Image (tube, rainbow, N blue to C red; front, side):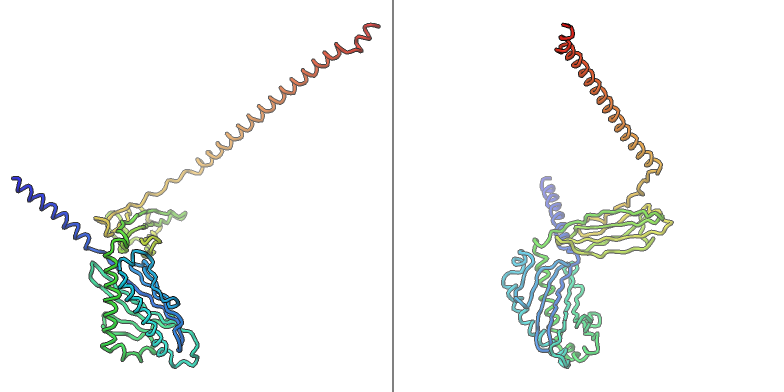
Length: 366
């Protein structure tokens, strides 16, 4: 019997640990992106700025002017290690030569060799439950799309006619091998190391507020705001009477970062004039919520009748005037009594003075 109890207890603990392990390994959607911005001429590279972000949180920064890799958080040095950071530093310095070569070949036919140009490269990779789901590699020259890698087609696509002359380079096995290696090593592998480091950001459930605005013309607008949550992936939608649907004009702010490495999202539903806005709830789905959470829309705020408000104001005014009038009356009475008292004292003084006056004594003597 005791043995069966121990087995049952062991099975329970194994089940609990298994659930915790599953929850920890079921990471939400994550993205890692690099922004390269190079400024140069046909003769020289003037500047190169590189910004790396995970889940829209900026992690590190590189500038050609000082050739230093700056980590935005101290724990990043521990997450990547000194050797890894030094290797990335050397790669970035070497990358300056690649951008210099790119400027010379992109604008080599330009007559004005001193004219400044801007070359931008955007690299992005995404993970869902530790599985790579997509990646992007795009080039832009002077603010216009130049070329990009099309994952579905499995080849590079020229966005401008000038880009077609680089087709032999893009189709080469060496170029494609370098691109795949960069995405795997510098984008995917680095992101995994960062996400495994617990100090990056603890998972936080969203703080949800739901409100409504009733316009004078009768239109009702509903607001659902989720803030302070991490990781970034979240779903918000409206339901009425327990069923999803579309009842008006919907809009969204998009998931945006906060200053503390968390995120916020707001969705808005503008209802038609005939809809009183009752029975609506905002449904929130996030990895830190065990089940989808529902947040009901508050009812229409009660409006006091105008005459009640007017009477209340009048009562306050009358009470204030009564208090002022009572004070003035009391002040007048007190002033009058004081004046009467002073007159009596003056009369008494005069009578006493006349009774003891030397003139009176002289008249009596005569």
